[in-house]
Image 1: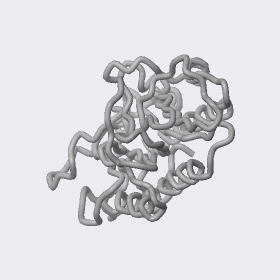
Image 2: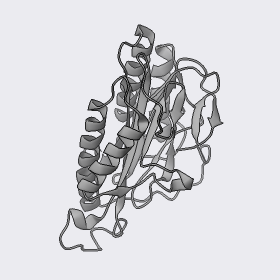
Image 3: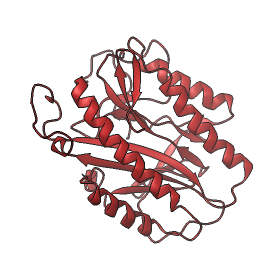
Image 4: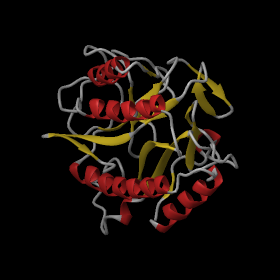
Length: 275
């Protein structure tokens, strides 16, 4: 998600999900993860973005879902297919994966609540009565990848875990961003600044913006029932970005990796919904 605003002192319009809503989002997230994992199994030298797009469409339809990304701000595909310096929003096309590449697969699926609940009580599903979105991303190695690139991908995956570890009632979103950025820099990488995570639910992109940098004193305070996507994007080079077509790439064309999970703040801590 492109960063719409920097941290504000004004309270954002963050929707608080009910326990029932979190439960159905977890069921949708489980399906999404199974599809992304299967797409990852097909990542190999010589595979094209169009092949992965066709497979993603097929599996989404087979699982009773709809496309979250297709048509969003004119995006033409259901899958984001971002290679090497592409950070996000790469369009699946006839480009084939080459030995030594890294590729990020970012997928969103929309589900009607009725897929999981036979009788919908609107008092239990006040925010999601018309359905909900799910969203996650993973970066994959293609063939034989050099050690520094492998280290980038591993560090980005660990940065996501560092961010997730800060999810609990009473913590600030700035503390989450600080944990991601500090870890990235300790590993010799940079956290991308002008792209970020986001709230999610009835809309694909909801408040709050979930930055990959920050300070403990920044941002909203986490409350039980908040659902959002944490998505660190790390670069070997510059944290600055530029646009190329519909995709965002690193300003200096350096390699970038991206991991994303959808999480809920619970009374006892957190729940990873893409699990």
